[in-house]
Amino acid sequence: MTRGPMHGAWAGAWQVFTKELRDALRDRRTLAMVLLSSVAMGPLLLVALSLLVAEFEARADAREVYAVGMDAAPTLRNYIERQAWTVHTAPADHADALVTRRLEHPVLVVPPGFEADLAAGIVPELLLVSSSANQRAQGSAGSVAALLRGFSQEQATLRLALRGVPVSALQAVTVQQRDLADPRARAAQLTRLLPFFVLMAVVYGALHAALDTTAGERERGSLEPLLMTPLPRAALVLGKWGAVAVMGMGVAVLACVGFLPGQWLLRSEVLAAMFQFGWREVALFLALLLPVAALLAALLMAVAIRCRSFKEAQASSTVVVLAVSLLPLVTAFQTGGEQPWHLWVPALAQITLMQRVLEGEALGAADLLLPLVVALAVAAVCLLSVARQLRMAVWK
Image (cartoon, rainbow, N blue to C red):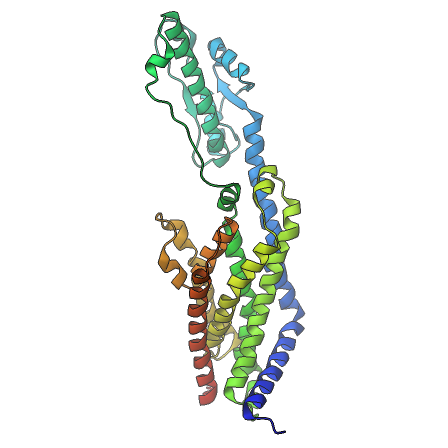
């Protein structure tokens, strides 16, 4: 039984695929750098994030007030200590210390006549000194301000009670707050970098393989003998494209799986309780990344195939890397939230859908199908461009 030309084309594509994959895996140094930057950084990112959250939690639990002139306000000191807060004396140069970030707490400045004004019914003025450039001090300023509002409310209540006026007479309405976000949605606000990190893992995983299999082979002189073989150009392009896409997806798989043991290293109990990233999330992430991996592999090859050297291809590919890294900023600067057109833009669509996965939202068939069709259509155009370049055999 004779085999048709289609079978021969697929067999040739498979041979090219295995050859390119072996070449990509043979470069141990580059592979190690890609794995280190794209895989090991995942757990490190989670650890760094959890350390930051844990620090803010510890600062909130510390309940410490740094003050100047607290000796002139025994009533205020009594209230603060009754709330289980600790009063510390701020340094004399607290203003410079806050600006230079040597002091990580806001400073409460109490005027000398505070107690006399309070007894006379005069409203004393407290000064809460902080620096918006000092994030740690600024983060505690809200808690101290809330503590002072509590003191003011208590004093007002006592004055009304002495005059026989019920407090409810001044309270026209009561306000109840309800947070509609579930724990996973709240945790997703802290882990917005994860989808971006995984997407960039695909980019860097496919980048070197795409450059090496096109501009690299041209520079080494190994592409011309390959073009002289009877393999159809389509088989040659598909084989190379498949190897590049597999490299990108391989790094993405390792990056996603790396988040699973990374959760064991979380230092924040609150974040560890809210952040749930299991095998379901891994599978959904990979399903969303597969189309964009195919697109990026084809796009990087289309860019590199037009370059005369490997270094020129590296310089040209930075445009693609920069574009992919800047697209997620659209959601950060757009106050209107997620828009329907986001799903039409590759990379941005994957970021949007992966964020939904982290928030625990269900993904519909249309949500998955639209980015898939767009990615495959753009990938097909890029592959046709690569095939055309090979067919023309324009090597300057």
